[in-house]
Length: 343
Image 1 (tube, rainbow, N blue to C red):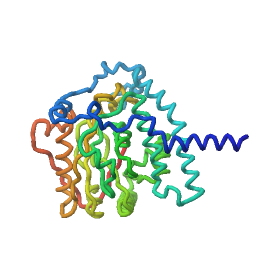
Image 2 (image 1 turned 180 degrees about the vertical axis):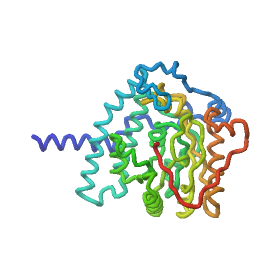
Image 3 (image 1 turned 90 degrees about the vertical axis):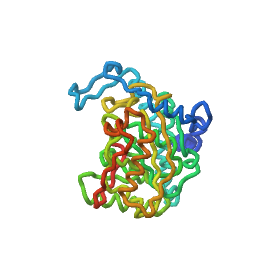
């Protein structure tokens, strides 16, 4: 009976991994769920959905010191329920795929199936919290796969990661900070999926991250990172850290900028969970690929920053750029120091 029960669970979980997409909202590609015209996009960028603490109306407040305060409101409680419901399913799915890989090392060598469990979780979580984003730009190119490339996005909220997982369907690897290894489910996904973990305080870890990133790119697997190096506390685009773009030039791969809008308004840094639904607010724009060949790191940084600024909402522009049409360019240091995802 125990063996029959185990096989039944395995069957359900494998069905989850391979077929769950059929029951989830697919990437919006029809007119009523995707922003098309430049006028609509301009209007979306002018909107601000940020809530004051009073408007958030917290039910739970942890640590009333403003520098470290965390709050949860009624909508956040629902998001917590969704998280607790999906977490065991996701954990079991990862465990089953890992078990299959341990039995046969030729199964899922790049951990693509393992990572797909996380992408299904992301779509499920966003759907159940009424936060499926809209999309514009080069979405179809992502669906078809870019081959080895460097994906880069602005980083203003924890939601950035699940949002990105809804469009980056082919296998890719995050550069993630070491602290995330201790986060339930997410840590298991990062370590079991062979994503790149970096310790910001360890120079050897930074060099190892750079080498690991190059190895994945040379094996045809894209890398995803946030050039700001950490999450913006107020949602505004910050200066870029050095070293990331040297990975693209060294590997000879293109850079694909991705702009994420209004994630900081849906889940600000002061909250443990989202404070409002993201539907109609969250938006992702995929920019055309930037060829890294023959360009310096400073030139690539300027091009990526200009791409972000062209699509970011007004309340996410740097204060100096909000009053000027000229993007700010920050020189990169000569020493590679890769930046990580998910701060």
